[in-house]
Amino acid sequence: MADIRNIVILTGAGVSAESGLATFRGPDGLWEGHRVEDVCTPEALVHDPMMVHRFYDERRAKLALVKPNAAHAALAALDRAWPGALLVVTQNVDDLHERAGSKRLIHMHGELKSALCAACGSTAAWQAALPPGSKCAGCGQPKLRPAIVFFGEMPYEMDVIEAALDEADLFVSIGTSGVVYPAAGFVQIARARGARTLELNLDRSAGRSYFQECRVGPASLLVPELVRELTGRQAID
Ligand code: APR
Image 1 (cartoon, protein in one colour):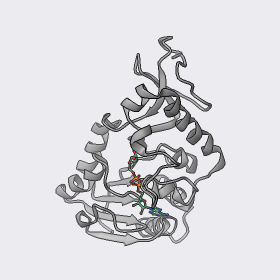
Image 2 (cartoon, protein in one colour):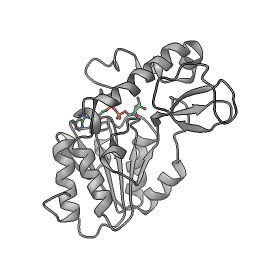
Image 3 (cartoon, helix red, strand yellow):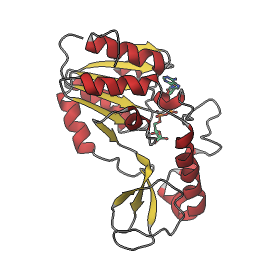
Image 4 (cartoon, helix red, strand yellow):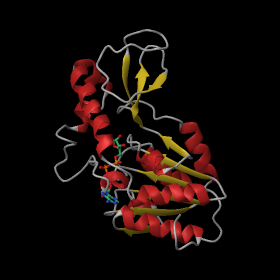
């Protein structure tokens, strides 16, 4: 790992699993009792806004009951220690990366602790329940919705992400099944640029063949190990 300067790290639900947050495509295929497609689409928001808002209210409330795990802590330590470019791109909408201390972070699928105005496009920090018809402080319209990127909508900050991938010497994917694009295609962009590609996952993902190396195991063990390799430090501070 000696010749690595610029790193991009993609995380998915698997990095938060050991904190107690459900992944999406677990054995039962339901996400906290719902089919993902029933609560994560613009159509669902129109068809049953109360169900969609309530679903995200429940997940937002759950954040107070969980805390970052060793994988989040290790990535935050890497953020503090890494002298080169580092960008953590998370598909997760929880706040565990930032609570662990990560700064160089993008939530490409949005955040539970944020509300989006469907009228003016502004976002605002949001901690409590967000009932349908909540008013935007900016434009006054009763059009606030969860600031979550639904299926069929464009993820956030794709230009920044693609620019970072173009410069990456190392691309690491952690705790994601590799089935949802554009995130699932990042490894191919990085490889085309000549970056080294590494997957850390509890089992081999759908995109495993694109990675030069796959390490199988829990993120709470594999991520601190990787950070020790990258920083050359046994103790992760
Ligand atoms: N450590 C590492 N990996 C784990 C762990 C763990 N403790 N537990 C589970 N995993 C792995 C699973 O093996 C699986 O490959 O994490 C992955 C989680 O996959 P998904 O549930 O599909 O979640 P994710 O890949 O983040 O989903 C991507 O899909 O529904 C959309 O927008 C949603 O951001 C989400 C996107």
